[in-house]
Length: 129
Image (cartoon, rainbow, N blue to C red):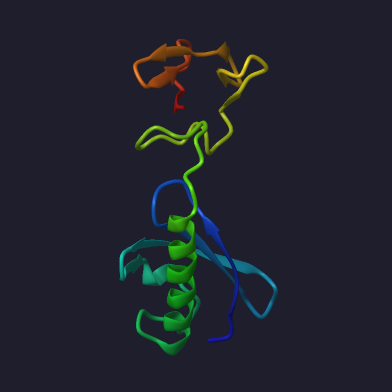
């Protein structure tokens, strides 16, 4: 149980967080945690050695993640460029807001609107805005 909570980072989507632990050798280990009300899901294999759901250490981290999630839900939502459900082009940096303020594929240029989604006609990159 020689690991310490290093940081909690919000991921795209409601209730998703990257929880990073620092090991004694100064390396880091990250677990993805999903919070849904009081329920909290995590792959135990991604936790530090000796940590399990229900352990004293994990319960303390789970309380911190739930508090972070509660604060995040109180904040006004940010309207901006985001990944489409199941997509990752915005998160990966493949789609950005261009100089004209419209979604732009970093490889091919300005994207075309298709309903609520912007699509790159060359590679199929997608983004919502």
